Image 1 (cartoon, helix red, strand yellow):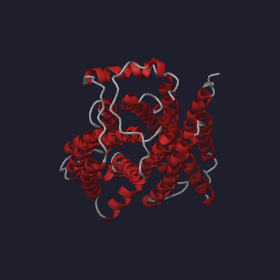
Image 2 (spheres, rainbow, N blue to C red):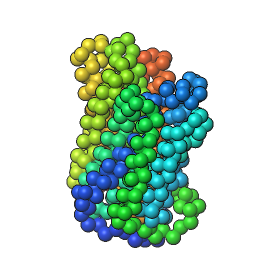
Image 3 (spheres, rainbow, N blue to C red):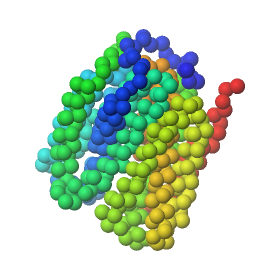
Image 4 (cartoon, rainbow, N blue to C red):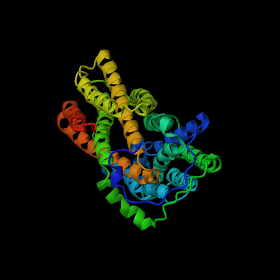
Length: 409
């Protein structure tokens, strides 16, 4: 079934698809684990920016570049590398980008100055988009009846990777060295590149387009695909709230309200992993055709989660428990809506999915970047009450927009 807006698609030469038969549980697990391991590379350095900058001679005011350059690389990769899934044999593309990320991680681990480390960070971000090549690849291999379930299972791995990366890197750095984090990840990426190259079935796109035309077509694709624009807007708002929360909650926890140390903050971050269970649940709901009502519930749950955080400022044990529950609910809603959105856009023609996913995640990423920037500024100005208000307004805007999505009669 083709989603609304598909009639506006540019004409594309048919693609040579992997047969749409039931994907094995083992292969689904491999793809989910690969997504989690790859995307974790984006987040390992976030809690380590201070010690990395101090050791490599980066001034305190410039340590933010460690995270920023990784994010810039990721944003560029979403627009310049992910669309190649519609042009280059996917198994080869995945093995190449994951292998290159291994080399970049080695460069980061053995950097002797901040220039080398920042250059490696840019490449790490650029290559981490291979996780967003895996997600549409999984959708190609699943029949329509179970596509949401497969995408949801793969996305659960991705979300676990996002939420586990920070506490894992914090604990390793505390007991060993920040360099060990990158060494272990480099070994993991090298092994993963070989595994994907050997095990994954071949998928050879047949778009017949040049790279220039492929990239140029993305502007038209975004302009002529209403479902992509709508789902991107929803998720940009939710991921903006997600970023507001996870950028500022460590400051709240470490401050005079809760007085938590780095280990306590790391344990708190583990609570967010529970939200990853939303992905397979949302996938199954989507396969039943309930995307719209499920999206409304997911969006509203994020707003409710942020409202609850405004009642956690007493510093009591109950406040901390409520904050943990809010984190789980927020991550649950954000992850569920992400899976629902990808299921919706993957109902569009298969030969477009690389570009569709690149655009969708790029919009999500932009929302997250804006949320981090404004959330940090709001917290510095008015504390948690101000930053949490941004986190409430964004999903409410998405909810009001979602109400305008009327089913076709």
